[in-house]
Length: 202
Image 1 (tube, rainbow, N blue to C red):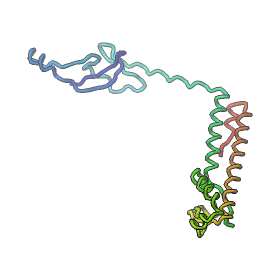
Image 2: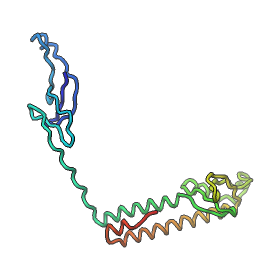
Image 3: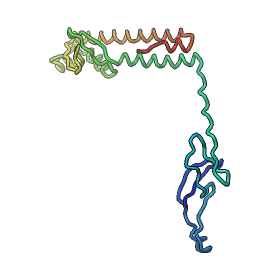
Image 4: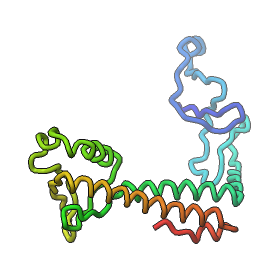
């Protein structure tokens, strides 16, 4: 026998197998099932699309599911705050998304993630020392995509090229930030949701 459980308000919760009451079954000479509170042996409807199943004490009823509460409409200032967060993320992605440098005399797209930035800045501090010469006799190895190629290759940068690489990275970061500032100004100047939607973060 199956039991169908409902909460204190009558709404269906779960189903399980019922257990016999061994003492009462023996005393009465017939099967007596244990039925806990908030449970019934009456089977609920098999289909309830768009409805909630509720037990009224005698039978199951289908109660129409309430429509979801509409999302509150955001104010223009709240929409601007959301857009500014997107601009910040967009700017950060552009900064760490790679940059072009000709430090070796050829166009190469290098990584510009945080780890690469920190590593190269640390190396740049030591390019004029014996340590740099000893650790990188062939030049500092940096991977990148040469123009027209789809696989990364290692570029070996000498001291001057490391400086140029770092200078190009700094220029890249500065350009990305300026683009971000332009977008921020556009957000601040927006007079409507349509104005905000028109600000494209490519």
